[in-house]
Length: 332
Image (cartoon, rainbow, N blue to C red):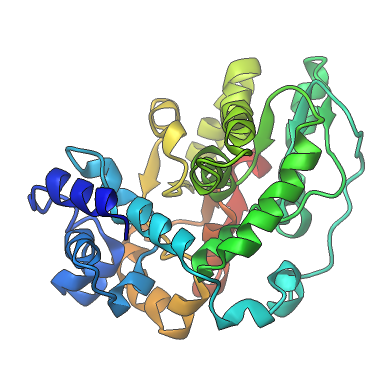
């Protein structure tokens, strides 16, 4: 690790422990090395530890820290210095086939240009295409057109979770090449995609010729919920009305950070970590252990609505119906 990064950790971390109880992996394993404070200390001393792999990259530690430092940010700098691990023999751009998703569900419209641009991501292709259809219907009544560019690929979150930084960069540059030619806000329907565009890509390409381009792209990027709150706030009242009538719990994903207050002021929500979809954590059985931490939130709930591909997948795999798993905007 670079000396200046090590010194920053040591100088800013006061060992207060505020990060410890909010860390999902610490709550499961109850060991200091599996807490953000413990990981930061190990990292600052140049010590590799298995607990690093158990970091969910949820950034709950960073949000609660008085100095806003967290393990994920520093760990990402470390990953940037390393070569990709042996897992590169797998083609994770074909991950959809690997985990046996259904075939891509076609949508009824795909204009190349519009007033705004939709990031047509894995979630919209395979999990909840109706969320995009509802979004488009609302905006059409407002006279706003959407563009859905062809050729976009995964945001790269899966590569980040595996430490495959070169693959992440490859996908990011493919998306950048396409999205730079579009206009208007870049609208995303997944909290993790939002996080990747707004925070991770600018950090990954820091001090490169692409840095300014990714910063500019990040400034255009907002969630579909935020865009509706700006252009069609009256329609969002439907969500609260349905919540009362249909026994719906609105879940806030960890990475929907920019929207926390906006959402909480309008809809009653629950904020808890699904456990991440990191393949390593599934192999270790972490998600099933972590489920015990949040399952109590779902007592007597018939519908669970979230805003993240990973959360949607985890809930779909870990839970028996009911609750039925939905995207927020499918309820419009």
